[in-house]
Amino acid sequence: MGNKANMILLWAMLVSVAAMATRHRPFQRTKGINGLEKIIVRDPRGRSFEVYLYGGQVTSWKNEKGEDLLFMSTKAIFEPPTPIRGGIPVLFPQYANTGPLTSHGFVRQRFWKIDANPPPLSSHPSSTAHIDLILKSSEADLKIWPHKFVYRLRVALGHGGDLTLTSRIRNSDAKPFNFTFGLHPYFSVSDISEIQVEGLQILDYLDQLKNRTRFTDHGKFITFNSQLARLYLRTPNKIRIVDHKKKKTIVVRKEGQADAVVWNSWDKKVVDLGVEDYRRFVAVEPVAVEKPIILKPGQEWKAIFQVSVVPSGCSRKSCIPHT
Figure 1 (cartoon, rainbow, N blue to C red):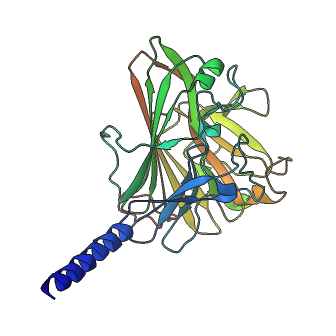
Figure 2 (figure 1 turned 180 degrees about the vertical axis):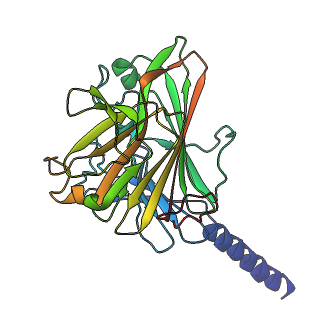
């Protein structure tokens, strides 16, 4: 009986340990739309994000109320090699059509892997939950863009519910290369007509609807009443998106990306965007375009993109994010 009791006790302990491990798993790996693999990461307060291995693309960022702070197109296509419309696409090694490659590069059309043993990150914002992904150039990639690279991406939830994407791109080739770069976040908003973007006044921008003609923005803020696509140059590291209807402000912080794009398609027809979808998103993108990044062999470049939500009118560091 003693041995049997010990066996039962040992079994109960193993079940308990397994249950604890399940409860405290850092992430859940599951099947998403059309069977594409995705990772779900949750923090102890119930906030979460989802990232598809296809494209290394964040497609959801929810607060503790279950509200998604990112926008996904109602006509998003989850069928490779088509890029996914919405969330936060990764644009590398070329932003838009600024070079010889297909617009926005090719990494958003590649299958990334979970990085089980990433090198330590210095000066990374503290997080409650995160996932590390990795993408290495393939032989097929080298035929398109003849430069070997390793791209490491950490997606993390901060203690206040903020979302941080840290990109590390290493030149693993024997020769230098240069690239342009961007993240393309689609932020969910109440209505595009209720939105204003602050922090880009008195800056030069290239109007992408007018053959990248250069202008200076003399307005106090940006509002939307038609299609808008502007590449702002040498921008500050903090940009604010004020949603008057929801009485909230999305605060975008960036490091390593000197420029910023503000975009909304308005009613221009986009194949994988619903007719009324333009009303529900604004894109404010951290990019490095005007001065391409140059990497020597073995050199690594790092960029940080952090976003939080605070009540409108809240600008002090003491403001508590409402994410």
